[in-house]
Length: 221
Length: 257
Image (cartoon, rainbow over all chains, first blue to last red; front, side):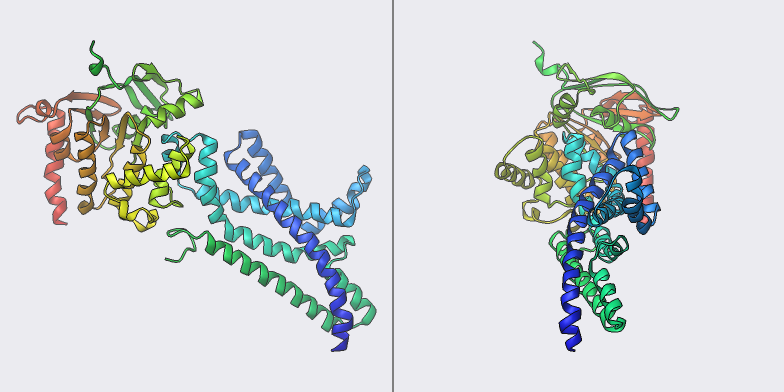
């Protein structure tokens, strides 16, 4: 027990701080990127749609570990040197943004054309229609998917240790190599992730409840 | 001066071709203040397309549309928005905004398009809901309303913009039979109040009683037009009369199902 309290928890707490420092900016900026890309892919002019599609294809199509390695080990060949933390956050933002854009795109496409016509008929401009009619509904539709992606991100943030950004998993691995007690250390690390995911799930659930509208997906009536 | 006789809305030589198919072929209409023009005709005749052309939801390939003698430049987004505010549209399937309550459905365009404050918009929206008999339902979402109630909210939403003309695209076709009456009653009140309207419908009793003119469309053209008395007189031998009789013959048969 003293091993857990004296060695594991302090080490993992250090790792947790780094993990949160990765997850919070990656998920928020990644979400904004996903919304912008999703909107561009549905409502943008042709060239912007193609650009958004290409971005999504690229960053959903290449494994995240490979992306991180390219950012950290590959870019120096081009004269671009990134810190492990910066390379990780950039990699996470691009990857999660690509996935989020797919959820947002699906949600935008699910809004009935009739409502867009009705808004136009009332004198709404295209931008006003997107802002006041399409976006509020799409956000509700996209929320479960986007929340799911944030939960994924919490877990794949563990890949940062591969490019020597020492977060929760990295700290656990270092501790194991020093103490040779993998069972306790990795179990404890698992509990840390479980708690983070549970907290995120709870917050997302509250958000869904807060914005629930009768007749929408998931809304209780 | 013949101000009262000059048309509110005038559409000249409207043609639409979609994917090589001629949907509308040189259709024209003039609506004077207070008139109720009824479009009838078989499905696929182009009634809905024509109504949607009149406010550029479907841009016509050729033709000119004027509101109170001002030709509309649909290429100019501001002019188009201003024009559409003055031309209310009612759709067959209501098209209420699913994420907004009844009162917010009416208020949103008042706030975002007409620029009213939140309170003003809400007051006006409540007044419009009251006018269609739904002030008790103002806090309900579309999913909580019946079809007839949804269509009445849609009418209130259009009326709130103070339109000079209303376009109604089969407003009762998606309703259960027992709900048709409440919507027609609202439209009847509008007609009695002098609202200028163009309405596509299969409600022949309604058309016969209230239309100032019936326009019979087929294959993208207006092939007959005239007052209900002229077109529906027994023995008139018109396509309109023939069409109506078939509709009425079909009605009792359908009721037996």
